[in-house]
Length: 401
Image (cartoon, rainbow, N blue to C red; front, side, top):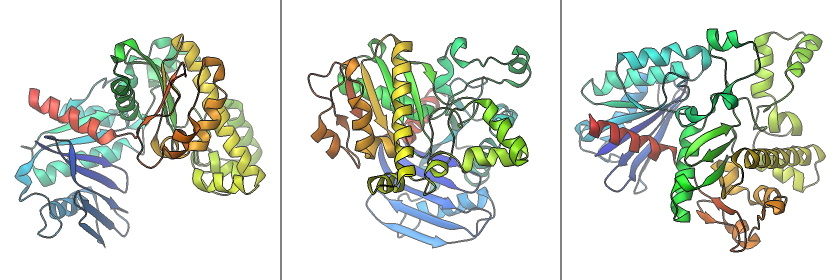
């Protein structure tokens, strides 16, 4: 079975074609700047590449480029589209409606559309991607949607409710949802495999650290709390996002600067975080490099990040009543060993002990344990693989159908 995995954004569409017989990637690529000037990238599993500028006015035209590349004489990996058994889509917001992956039908599409107010940038793009896929591949090819929020749907009400008037939960579904669910699901499951234990016997804290970051407490395979909230703005500081802050900061700045809600939203989501504190970049690599060279604001940004990671791990250890394993994943978590070392050095009270050499070398695709044999808590670096989670769910649901 070959599964095409799609991650549609408002002006982009990433894809992977996965052979489920061995879970190998046959091809992957990205349609960039859809509706603008258009750029297409395609790479096969054996290293063949195609990259060119091409007009893509909408997601349907982007799908045509994907289709053509997959069957192309030079860079193709299949003879015809009939080899694609099913298509799996990532959807950011499933709200309280979707607590598990679903086979696509009109009712499911309508459900995703109903959640657009909770994800105005992401969900419309996902719907466009699904409908474009139907246009190009036809209705006979089954499609499955996998929701970022679904893994977090096990949170208890005490964790997901906000202390605002209850009527806003009833009227507008204002609550904590959490994101990066497919990533947290994958790495927590993989952590249990590496430990040789049943996930139902483990308390795990997963740290998805990248340009967008979230930390999750997983007890017996179920999420009990996560740092992102109603939107991906909550939690620890990120590339351009504030993370959590006193809500009065928002109204105070708006009043002082005369900002509209839209302008304030831009400030919080696109001008804050590493960029806002350092004044240099939203990329942690640039900020860390500047900090090493003595830039005080850059050092403040890295110190703040490490402090906030530490704080969430401490809080979630209390929520879980202990912790068996801590996992670092995503761009920063997988590749910035200095952040891992500094955070874990302050977790000695939990019995955490890091192997400095293994940690320093554990970057760029490394998977494994970076804690010592004497450590009372296992610490892992696990590269995330959200696409394989989507592909597995798609294969399972299509197989049942």
